[in-house]
Length: 445
Image (cartoon, rainbow, N blue to C red; front, side):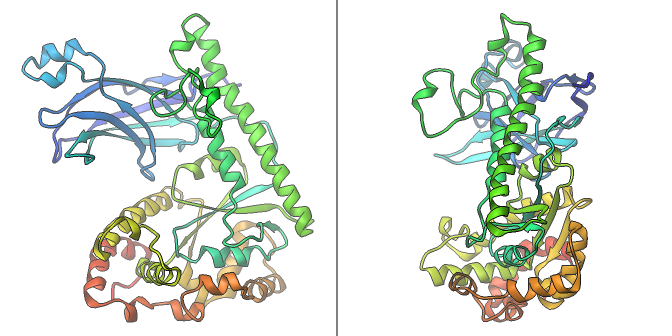
């Protein structure tokens, strides 16, 4: 184990008040602070004179993944003394711990105050940014199989992409429609959950956890309270460095065992990679951290097409999904989709230096060339016979794939939004997706 800090805070940036003003101060951490493990302590206070501040939500700026919700409820007589007329100042304190494993090496945390609205309504006011850097986890296990992450969204062509890649002799994908068996992703999630500090309010508590046989959460003894009568630094190092290393070693060995079975079942003796779909979340960072030859494909298509495809697939199946089930109109749905697209684009921007951007339309219209470029990025066989095999076998229909499609063939899907959307929906999509379409080079009309 290397000596020296694991996390270093380079700057703490207070944010100006927005629509819902919040009095806020962050006591810990400060710029220049260092931490010897993968847990960052946060302490401070927050209150609003108009609405109750329920918690401080901490998320990654890259993809808005919430890392922790820290309740605001601790007694702060010093804050009350500074604001004697503010009743809310008395219990405005917060204190919590953030697990930093699986966050970027250069990270920015966004702190938002969650304010109570009417009923279950909540307002989220950004109050501060924490900038820092961290040392990746040291991993001694040498995995046999390396991951290819297919980062995408629903109805963006990921099922067809998985079908194509599954035909490559060096790539492992369980041949089960819709190609969403994510064993490695499950174990990466387990590493994060089992390594993060305790959260007795929202995760596993220390009392009678053995009675809950349906789930397991953060270790309830990974807390400052449990370190009181022990050598705090020794136990902290074990919780924050040694234990995550051991959990990671076990998880990677388990992933290896599973994909070894897949390789044997598929008789792929030359396989190097496995592929799993993932959403735009912080999970990708942990893959990149613990695998030295990870790859990532960011699969995207015109977001207006995805709306058309999702709407058609909902009709085909006879029920709403892809977020449409949560709202009462197409406009509200498109607004909801914009939020998901924003997270997706943030994740792409954060890893564009290492990921392969694959536009569905390019793959449809120029398959041989695009597949060749992709396979070279993956550092696998990109010969003409192999590409030909992927195209021929990957386009072989099954009853499941026929049902999954919402057009006769892939080429018919390109630009379908122009014919299927009315002018009102086109204008709404243009308004909500304009900046993302421009960034990716899609025409607005």
